Length: 136
Image (tube, rainbow, N blue to C red; front, side):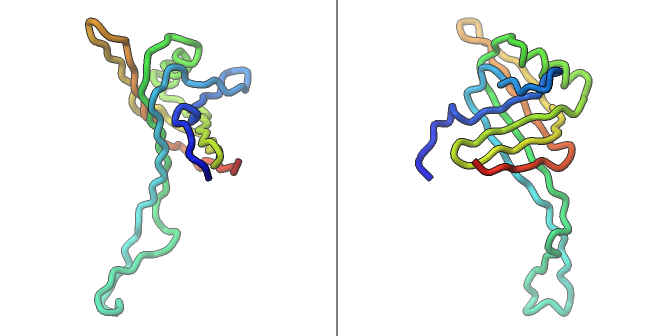
């Protein structure tokens, strides 16, 4: 895979018409997959090495981003999702790699600005169910 532009990574939210709208103004985006482990180490474990139970842990996905506040349609969708604490369908696009899509809960939404600077925002999303992955 060739090097990719970070700006080509996109975070999108599904609107009421079933279309995905890009969250505007995001300058940085991140996607994380997590899996908790279940330790089954016991006195019979070979030489005291830790043993883990495959496939038994809780899995989750996280999306985060930060950027310039634009006050667009997508901002209104995100604000609404946060205040209603509704699980909305989000899509995270990784160029030349794949697309992750599924239900996420907006768990953190913050706005900031300096006197002689731009207004910014940050958000964090946590999976609220199993996301799907489609290779590009």
